[in-house]
Length: 169
Image 1 (cartoon, rainbow, N blue to C red):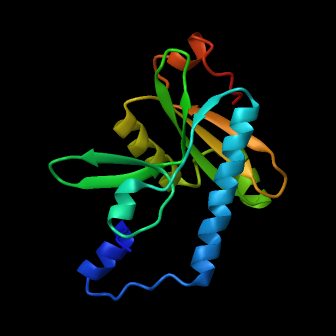
Image 2: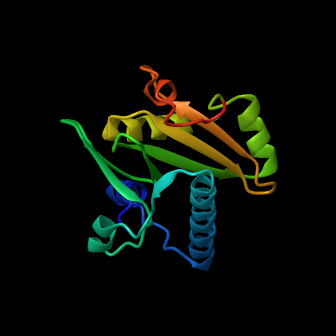
Image 3: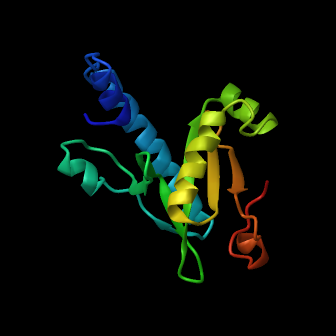
C-alpha cells in the first residue's frame, strides 16, 4: 500500500510488512463497527454522509473506506479519511470521527476523555482543520453498544445554540 507508515518505512530503508489475512479481517471488522455507528446516528434522526470506497485511494491501488481529506502546508501534505459527516439543517456538514473500543478501553476513555490518547485528539484536530468545522467524536463500546459523544472545537457554540445536535457530554 501507500499509507504514510509504508512510505515512511520505505524512505528509511525498511521493507514494509505486507498485509495478511489478519489485517484484512481486522479492517473488515472495524469497517463493520463504523457502519453500525453510522446506523446508530441515523436511528437518532441524523442525516449521514456515508463512507464509501475512497476514489483517491483506488487510484493508487489501495482499497480504503472513508471520506478523503487533505491538508496541504508548505512543510507537508497530510491525507486522511473521515469516518462520516452529519448533514446539518443549514446545508453544511460536520465531520464525525468514530472510535470502537473494548469495554476496558471505553471505560478508561470515559473517565479521562482524550487524556490517555493524545493521538486521538491530534487526528481529530487535523480533520477539523481540513473541514474548517467543529466535529463530533463518537466512541462505541464494541462489547456493550454504549456510546460516548463529544462535540470538539465548537468554540462559537454553533452546534448547540442552533439546536442542530443534541449530543450529551
